[in-house]
Image (cartoon, rainbow, N blue to C red):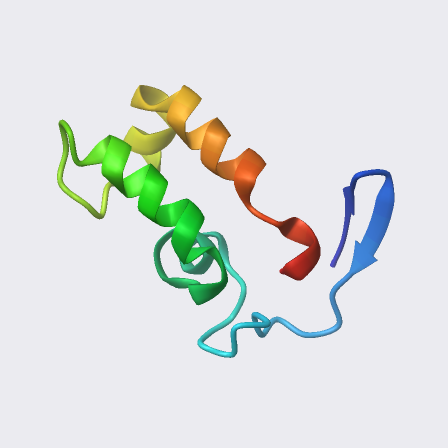
Length: 80
């Protein structure tokens, strides 16, 4: 599936995540992918001040929009 990042079109030929732990889904990247542990740890630390982890995607997006956007911006898409 192609997607655009930094004006570069990237094409995935396999659903497997480069971390080799699972398929590259939203849930995998958000909750499990080892390639974004550092970024996820910052997200979790911010969420754990007032919520339990894991948090639902709905709550994350609607209640913690700024924190979630910061996580998304920090994920190195070129490595995924």
